[in-house]
Amino acid sequence: MLCPSCGAIQPLDLSVDYFTIFGISRSFQVDSKLLKQKYKNLQKKLHPDLMSSTSEKEQQFSADQSAHVIRAYFTLLKPLSRARYLV
Image 1 (cartoon, rainbow, N blue to C red):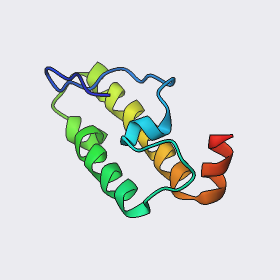
Image 2: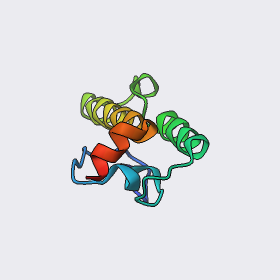
Image 3: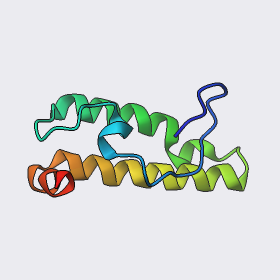
Image 4: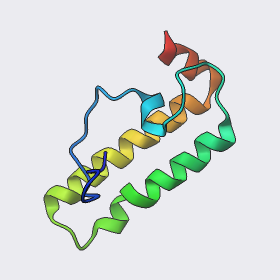
């Protein structure tokens, strides 16, 4: 999501697994407190409101990445949606 050398937001890659996004193991058992913490940390870096002084391209990358992180978070947060995702 972020360039490792410069920290710039990258284009959305839909092939990245939701568990990978948060750096947690692919398992039905998820520590919801840890997931929430990682979600908040990512949103502090990706949220579109923080990108007002960047280019339109970077703002779009930010909006795409942030929305994807939100989808991933709520999917992994709820046991039923997490089970469906794992299957």
